[in-house]
Every structure is written in structure tokens, then in C-alpha cells.
Length: 189
Image (cartoon, rainbow, N blue to C red; front, side, top):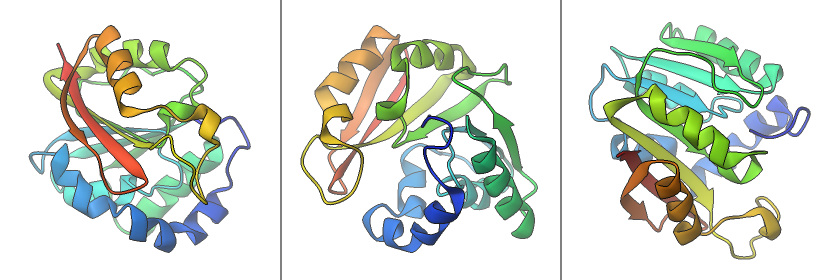
């Protein structure tokens, strides 16, 4: 998750319409959420870009919104409250993964490249997934773009797949879109 003070929730909310043009959350949810009663952990929830659409989608499920920045968790849970989404719970998790009930899916959208110790996070997430669970990552392609993180901290699909496998995950599918992103669907071995 980005370092404390790394992002401003208001700035993220203001940029959300533009972000949706490149990465529409609603169209990606069926890639990793298979039933409406599942439990999702949105690790690095930010201001709720994926959390809120996922909570709408999971009408009989639950979404745990985790972020190291308490402002992000507050922004996300306030959005959920305003939209009448009682299935969102927020947790501040500063580089650690709190003990939660096993989840059907974990989402890490544009988070992996910002983690201090991404391999340790993957190892901690592994036992939080049900045996049939899914880990879904969205990352920036390691190519120059006008927006996004510095090129030096981006990780390519093959390197990410190798790190997932080293942490006990099996890559089930690689999506090479929408540009300038790619997505990886993995599960516990």
C-alpha cells in the first residue's frame, strides 16, 4: 500500500471519472467474483474505486476495505455509508495483513508496485484465501505513460507471475488489457 500521505483521497475521488475510462471496475469484477455472496478483501482500497462497485455487485457478500492510510479507509467507508452499502467494513492495515475470516477473493489494484515488502504480503495473504479462492492483481505495464507510477517501480507480468508462484500461488490467467494495465488471476496451490 502506498506510504502514509502518499495519496489524497479527495484527489483520487476527483480523478475517478478519468480513471474509469481506462479501467472500468464494473467490467472487471466478473473476472474474479463468481457469486454474489462472496467475501472480498480489497487490499489497498484507496478511496474505494473498486470497493464501492464490488459492494454493489456482492449483494449477499462482504467487502473488507484495507489500506494503510486511515484517510483512505475513512473515505471508502463513508462512501459506502452514503450509498447504503452495509456490506463494506474498513480496516487500517499498516503493512500487515490482519486476521480476517477466509475470503473468496483478494484484490490488489495498482498496489503491488508500492508495497515495501510485496513478497511478505503475498505470503500473508495466501492463508486468508479459501482453497478455491482467487487473488486478482491489476498493475501498470512497465512502459512509459503520461500517468501512473514511475517506470522504475513497475513490475512486468512475467516477473509478477514468478513472484506469485514463489509465494505459493498458481497463475490461472493473464489479461494483457486494458492498456496501460495488465491483470493477473491467481489462486493458492
